[in-house]
Image (cartoon, rainbow, N blue to C red; front, side, top):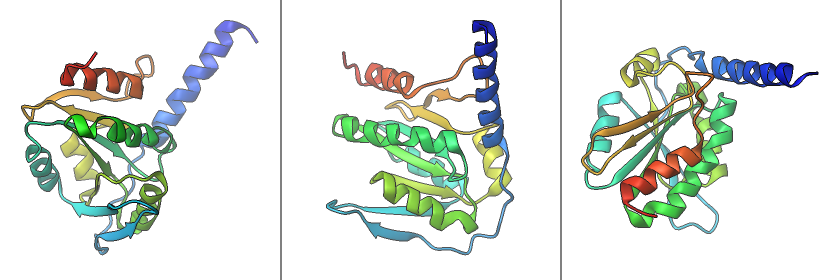
Length: 187
């Protein structure tokens, strides 16, 4: 296999993974309530709170004065699950410096328990929401595929949207962390 063919295979694989996460799960009626689980050795509990888009925006606005990272993911999205531990690490590293991490699951009510189990497994002790509006939620967030990381500045405004919509321009959590350091004015 030539180098050119190898590069083509890698790019095609990334496109396939992105497309697989772009498939929207059908909207279901939200019948589950928030569930809580204690993490081993942790004082905080891990929850997954069903919310509508407007409630999510209000939660972000309440964090004015802090840098806010919002990771949009789903339990059925492999790239989301692979990247999620980086959000947990960013929370551990920068919460004491004024960074608030949030996760927003696009799972439907049937997948609530799967999403919550994943959050517990990863130790996601920050705020975790599950958007309840199905396809409307995707549209309101203006996203085509996941994962997506939204970064809000201390003024409460969106600073940057990290997406993998362009196969030639994929983000990494190192990119997200560089922006966080810049917003915190850290070396």
